[in-house]
Amino acid sequence: MAENDKRVAVVTGGSKGIGRAIIMALAEPGLTVVFNHYDPPDDKAADETIQMARDKGCEIEGVRLDVSDYQAVQEFIKGVVERHDRVDILVNNAGITRDNLLSRLKEVDWDAVLAVNLKSVFNCTQAVARYMMKQRYGRVVSIASVVGAMGNAGQANYAASKAGIMGFTKSVARELASRNVTVNAIAPGFIETEMTAQLPEKAKEAFLAQIPLGRAGQPEDVAQLVKFLVSEEGSYITGQVIHLNGGMYM
Image 1 (spheres, rainbow, N blue to C red):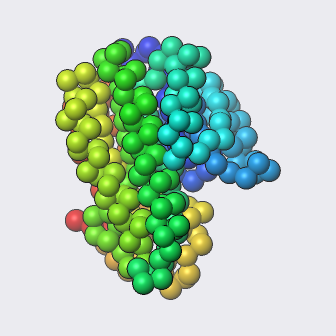
Image 2: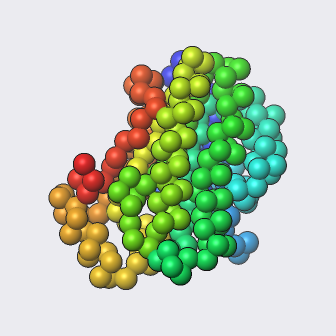
């Protein structure tokens, strides 16, 4: 499609952190963004994101939705298409952590992380794929993690979910390429967000010691790469896992 045509983007986990940065990188007049979040009802982060995007002239909607719920996602995406006629971009960003050593890891924490981090990618990608294939255009970007490639003690569930995203991305890219739908993943390293802010100082220092560039990444670093991958300039890239980690993993 032409660069000046109206586009519709869906971003999961868009109320704060990397998700908000992605929305702000994409936000411009002529783009409609629909994002989900699962914040507590009294949390104002989603409202703040909406106002920030509107200030840039972007049409935007926020919905509280559990993306691990298959049927809810089907209805969510169907509603997006009914209201806006199409869906051009999907960014699978929603994710949680429930860290613990394997010997102490509870089944409920394994299931929760796999459901939110990996099953949601299947739910959302399958839901948008039928529309993207019909319109013969689409861009899917999923946020994986460096630990999906290199592992990390205490994160067996998180690493497994992110490694799953990598394999899923490559398989679906092969299926959808003939319909002009690209499917890629970004594997960030240590990015400064609310999630990483909760880590003990010693853990942060250990991560930083592994980064040749000597600093943590910012949500905007991830967002700018998403922006490129969903642009026409990124249209010949598909089935790739792009590592964004300051050299932490090569």
